[in-house]
Every structure is written in structure tokens, then in C-alpha cells.
Length: 355
Ligand code: PLP
Image (cartoon, rainbow, N blue to C red; front, side, top):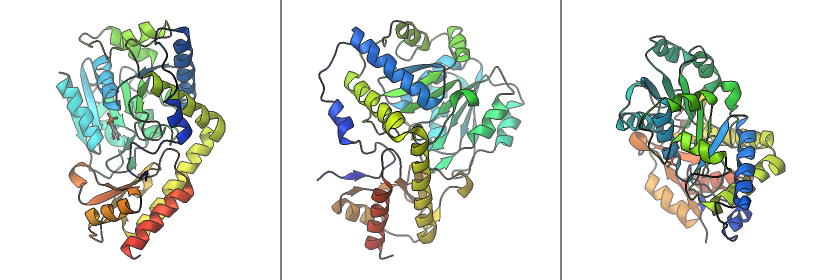
């Protein structure tokens, strides 16, 4: 029996999307491929509310986090972190030989714009990284307020990880002035893992021209050169691209973006109500995410036992992440998940725990 995934990525993929993976493979230097690539990119632009260039990378999202750093950090980067993935971005920045400061905020809290303003006022940074939706804590950072601060510093490149929000929470790239907005396809977009996408502003592209040692695989200039020929620099995961294009078509024209965001809001509300009734939210409630909920295990229940029992009932459960691994558990509610499916999952947990 297939197990239903309630982990924060990868998530369940609809059968019709999976079927796209079994279509014949086409050559990546053909006209047909070029049409597929451009059609997918045009849909991503609608999803991201942007007119910037969009690149599709055959890698996981971490590859594009590295790309953003290698192409857009010249002087010094400010890595804002209120969770594990923000901290990972700092590690990536340093490992790539760039100067960086870590603005560390307690896990579970949202990033307050004031502290970003204080840091930027030193004028020592030419790039800022932010994780929009911290998958480790279930916090969605107030990106509209933070973006207002960053706009006051036109030389700063704003690099945003929307890995667990794109496709579930509205992100208006152009309005927000995001220079690089990146995500994977295996979370709120509900496509099998293996592709990552990013929008790149003119400012980021111009800057990347002035930066040495960008490498080859994640070099925005090389991505752009090939995109001008409707191609990708290297052999992409063609089958996944077909699945992504098909899924985006469904998202945009079958469900509709606003309906999709609304469904995620409802999923978030239902999960938070359940969590507050039975446990406590880990995230500051004001910033609690609509794609996943991180829950404090205030009743000290045996999470391994719960995981085993849920497995027997056909579900894959998620515990916490990183340093809060054993103190919390997470319920993902993103992708194509239906309200009834979430309710059934919560009822199953209620039965197991005797609530
Ligand atoms: N950023 C966030 C917010 C994530 O949730 C994840 C993965 O869970 C990543 C980055 C890394 O993504 P990947 O494993 O696709 O490289």
C-alpha cells in the first residue's frame, strides 16, 4: 500500500502528474524541448509574479542557494537565520569563500524588520539571504515588511529561499524586489524531487558579470546564454520538466492561484486549531506557516511510537528538525493535499493518542 506523506517534502504527487514521467524522452537540443522549457518558464513567471528571467536547474534547492551566493555576493553577505535552513545558507556562504555575518534569531520567532534595518544601516553588506518559510520551525517570515527595508539599500541583492512556500503562499517577486527567488519542486508544487527553479533580476545578472569564480554548473551567465537559445546548459531532467509543466498548468488553470493559496490558508488554520487544542505551536502564532505546522510535544508523547502506529495506518509522519528534532513534530499541509485528507490524518492521530 502506498503511504501518504505528511512530511514537509517531498510530498505526494498526483497520479496524472506521475504519468507524465512515463512519456517518451525527447532530446534536449530539439525545438520540442525548447517549447517545453519556455512554456514552463512562462508559467513559473506567472506563479512568481515576475518578469525577471527564470532558470530551471537539475538539482535540489541547495544547488540554487549556492548559485545565489556564488553569483551575487561580492563584498559581504548578511545571512538572516531563524531556523536550520537560514543557518545552512550561512554555512554555504562561508564554504564558498565569501565574507558573511550571521544574524541569528531564536528559532520559532519571526524575523522582525527592525533588526534587519539595524544590521543594514552599517552599509557593509551587498547581499542579504532570507528563508521565507522556515521548514524547521514552521515560521513564515514577514517578507513584505522586510522587503521594504531592503529596498532602501539599492546595492544590496535580496536572495530569498521560498523552498517550502512557492506554490502554497503568495510571493510577488517583482513587487517585493527579490533579486533571486529560489525553490524546489517537491514541496508546495507537488512534483517529484530533482528540479529547482529561480527568478533572477537584471540587477543580479549585471552583478554576477562582475564576480569571479562562479563555477560552471550554477553560473547565471551560462544559464542565460543557453536560455537565449531556449535551452539549458547541461542535460536536464526532461521527464521532470514535463511533469512540472503539466502540474503548473493545473495549478494556474484548473485550481487557480488564489484558490490554491486559500486552500493552504485553510489547511494551516485547521492544523493550528488542532495543535493548539492538543499541544502548543512552536512558531510565534502571528508568523505560523500555511504550508507546515511545527508542534511542541508538550504532552511528552512517544513520537517514535506514534510514527510506527501511523505507518501501520498508511501515513508517513514527520518529527522535528535539527536541534528541536526530539522536542517537536511537524505536520506538512502543502501541495495538492485536500482538506478531507488532512482531517482524516488528524483524526487518525486523535484515535492513536486517545484524544
Ligand atoms: N530550504 C528550505 C526552507 C528547505 O525546507 C529545504 C529542504 O527541506 C532546503 C532549503 C533544501 O532543499 P533541498 O534538500 O531540496 O536541497
